[in-house]
Length: 267
Image 1 (spheres, helix red, strand yellow):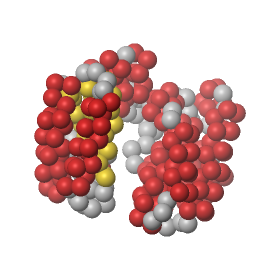
Image 2 (cartoon, rainbow, N blue to C red; image 1 turned 90 degrees about the horizontal axis):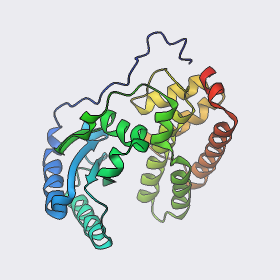
Image 3 (cartoon, one colour; image 1 turned 90 degrees about the vertical axis):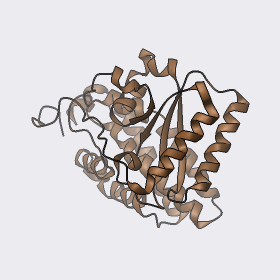
């Protein structure tokens, strides 16, 4: 898909919707906020909900609770250890989610111009503020671009290589399936780094990411479909999954090196 061919594509990315939270997750979110405020006190600037719980599409017992925390300064070692204890305790108290994740940033970094396409986009388009001053209001809506995609997914190589190691070392089936699901979701979303430099649709769901990628790279459609299936219901052996992941990752790296910005415009 090219930006010139997409006459109906939006000029800016849709803002994050804020439907009422599902009843099954209200107590969890309330408990998370209370725990964070008690643990962090004045260090906590604001809290943002993202992912399926934020979109009110979560599945009890299956989905994760994903929170972005903006702090007034970086945590000391003992403070970080205490926060991790609170995260694990919160996770243990709430079987309605499979995992609790904290994505942590520091206020000065969030506001720094160098992080406009990462933190700025993230808070504006992927999060809903549930505590504190909403920093997302400070940013204008972003246009679809490869710059935003690369900023948000810039760590994909390192993260996916870490998943390959974790999957190879997994000792039980439950942990294996969790890691495979997380890795597949990361990979499917990371394909957006190969999007056109400007314009085009902006994916909102895993299906969108896989479809847009397959339209641009039809020779890789079968591999993309494999990881979309694993992102929903992983069932591959560790060996098969890692072989597929390593091959796809290598292909993406070669494409990223081969495609100059001008060539990306024409995909």
